[in-house]
Length: 231
Ligand code: HEM
Image (cartoon, rainbow, N blue to C red; front, side, top):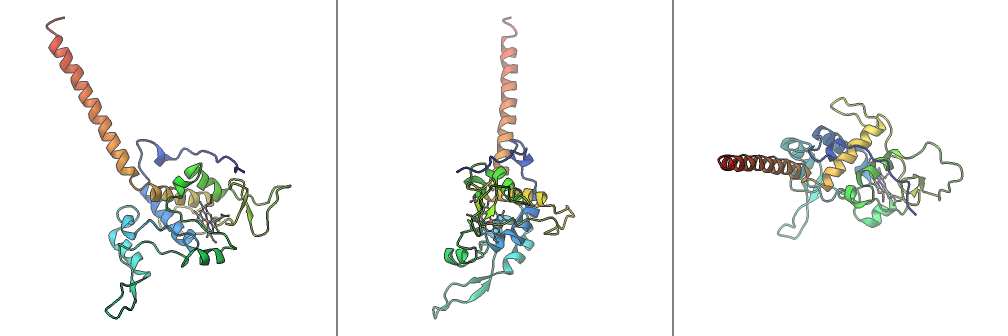
């Protein structure tokens, strides 16, 4: 059964000649970190990937160091704890899928790294899902025990409850943290995690188009110049 078709939004960063809004990405990371990361991993993103995207190198280092990772085994084969480094990946909230299910009524919170590409509807789906929990379950809807009603989720019964509420986080840039603002920011951030090369690709595209147009204009001028005497 399909969910309600997500509303399409005119995402600024999705336009062919626009890049990500990096202030939005930074806010979106904050939402991921403070809200989603307690259940969802982002296993394809190392701290170094955040450098120059959402954070400075010193900030990213400090965030990595705030976590503990297993060291390489020493000469005695013992594994110790060491602080994180830029090359480490963001930590997972659970040791394994079994623990993740145990913490979520049997449901598995999927890794979010590629979520923006994984579901039909892409970023519109994620935004609609996060903001689409109605205050009251509509009359006639059947919601199985332990699930939550969300019309955008295929089947409408989802193990994830509504997580975003106004003022849940406090943005350092002063942006009011409404439910929809946080949903927009974290969705844009998840678009980046699924497509970190997007800015680069579009900048290259604009260059290619500019140079091609310039060369074409030049060729028109040369043709006219060469044929001027004949006409
Ligand atoms: C599923 C996003 C926070 C638990 C999902 C899905 C997305 C998502 C996109 C996939 C839905 C699908 O399969 O189509 C987010 C975001 C969060 C967040 C962006 C933060 C803003 C949380 C939190 C928890 C949680 C805090 C746990 C308390 C789950 C679970 C599922 C899920 C258990 C699986 C649902 C099911 O298959 O029924 N989430 N989530 N999520 N999420 Fe979250």
